[in-house]
Amino acid sequence: MSWEALRTPEDRFADLDGYPFEARYHEIDGLRIHYLDEGEGPPIVLFHGEPTWSYLYRKMIPLLVNAGYRIIAPDYPGFGKSDKPTDPDFYTYDRHVAFMAQLIEWLDLTDATAVVQDWGGPIGLRLAVEDPARLTRLVILNTALFSGHAPAGPGFMKWRSFVEKTPDLPIGFIMGRSAVTEWPEEVLAGYEAPFPDARYKVGAHRFPLIVPLDPDQPGAADMLAVRTALESWAGPAMVIFSTEDPVFPPAVGERWVERLSTAGELTLIDGAGHFLQEDRGEAVAAAMISFLDG
Image (tube, rainbow, N blue to C red; front, side, top):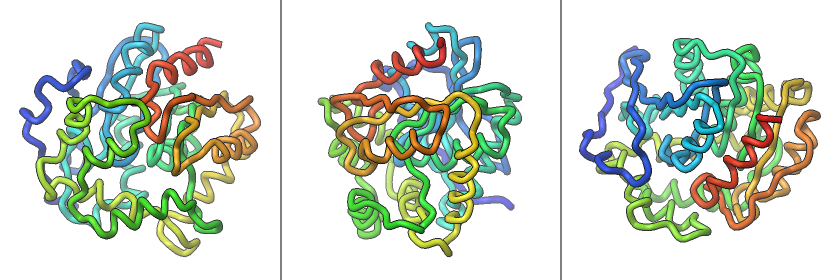
């Protein structure tokens, strides 16, 4: 099936703060998907969340490359430099998992580490349990799996309510409100860059609304299956959460540690909110390197 999509003009990405990486592309089902591929060594795949893109990991990528790792950071359809379908029905959990699975298969990645945060959790963790030869290690940042069997937290419901009332999401404002450290205006502009106007924001608007809140909703059974499969996960795993995330507080991280027998103790990053990669990216990268080198 072909989907009508928009492509963000390239000049929107000129001279982005701290983002000197080479753009790479692969076409899937008629859509151009952007990804970064930096460095050499054991592969690490960085899965972003909502409403971000690979720009979120720019502080961490050079540190991980210098530590001897190959870094792959894709942008989902609808985000970053990837094409942006304009039909809201395009945006489903299954479809985004399928797109990322095809990209990982095309890159022929094996024995890779999956780093997941926010919506990257449901996407990346499902890929790991469905194809464990390709993604063999997990680093779980602020995220959760929603099966609808327990109520979503008040932080998420407040966010969802805001999205429902705001079809033209103010991306820079949203990111700025999430900051714990001080983010310069040029950083906020980096998060706004993929979205010239509301027509480009369909994916960013849809993602919070497709989180299943009831067991009968699409995606709920799949996320429950991923959660169940992770209870027998045998590969190395690390859980890193921040201390000041109103959506996924440290208690959520503790539940991940309880679920994953190989995870060890929860690593907490002080002075960081929901987007810990932006607030304290260097500290997150250092914790990851210590874990992976070990």
